Image 1: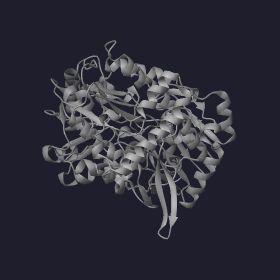
Image 2: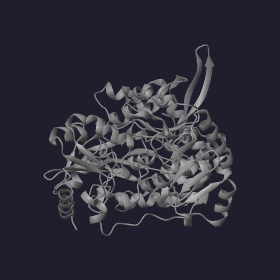
Image 3: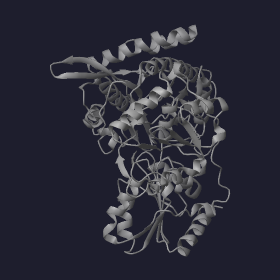
Image 4: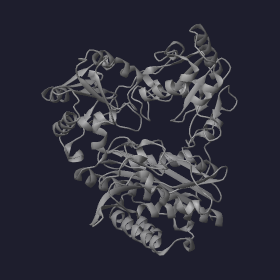
Length: 593
């Protein structure tokens, strides 16, 4: 059934239920970024495959709202269909659109299992003056998606202390202490990455993230873990039993929450708690709303995790070095394509010890494809790497000893002066943020301009954030911290020693090329002065930066010194694991400017 037929069937159901507008988000019941195929409703319905989007359906309109990373992709994928890609920079957000285009007293419906309580509150508040009626428990998709994929099933496995550094019982005790301080009898954890961190387990339910789909309700004496019991080996289940971790069916989460005492209190994060689970909380129960205590704790990597991250970065850097060496040796010998290079890089990473898989779908974009921040190669778009151009490679790996995310942009053939200028301005942003020193208490939005200043001074900018938090053998995008313009809560989070964040300024010239240079940076303690404790960043990623694209006249002395020092570090740490031929090549790539 094509998208038009699906839309016809959906509108029939809407009409029969008296629904004027139906809203579909790109999330699942855990409200995370990566969702299993079972919940990829927007892709099934419209053909748009981006990870962020909201669909609005009326009897005469079908629109897909996404963000700046995906608008070009959405426009291409929706071309020729009844669905319209909406650019948020040119049009109103979807709630404002609803307010302006739907009549008062009409019904708005959505599936409350995949819509956060924060979103539903915002919807009700901003549309209050229109007197709409709402149905927050409306699932119309299951009736028409007849061949819907099942929920995933993978076996959980222990994430050993030699990697994570702390026993699960120690983590549980710390969380309960914080709950006591917050006067919370229960804490509802809806994000699987938090549960994986707390219980020192990993799984394979989500593509690119080693997670087991689950909810958890932490009490003073017990932890109720809502998940498919068959996912947990007997030995693990026995270990859980000794810690009073009780495994209950995944689908019973709301029912158990509804049975809690109204005289007790519950802590939860409204941003990632579904409307459905929120409605299950007994009336009168004291509700404490904040980010999960586990989210704050796991964001600060401990000494064992940091030591393991360093090992993962070396392994990852070796794979990347071999990849770029191979590309340079073979670019004139055979026709290389974007898809082939994706597979080649994944293969080289898979040779590393403790490798679990990619941390996200690799982006290999040549020339105009590099201008799509989240480009995914398909059989229709698969470009050959021919002639002069710019190749952008954004990729990462999941290892038992860390999660990586790195972007390098290299020249194929001879770059133009415009490309070298753009590249160098982006590089200045990457370096200037990496060199930052700042006082304790600094937030992500306060550092964002360091990465953008050189671009802004030359009339350039990029639409996405500058940096996202990164998990430890968990999600490649993982807060609470981030670095960006200040629109989201993450950029208002205080940066603390032990937080791992990306550093990725960019320039995208639509239809021409994209340039992004990304490293992961670790927040560390610096000196303490009469003005308090200061912090700095340590660059953790290890891979050469293409000097053929650098216009050295645009770099100042500090930036040149930083790059030379970084290249010395790259060579010293990676060379022991390379062949003599690879070593000679890397030595040239990392020689001083």
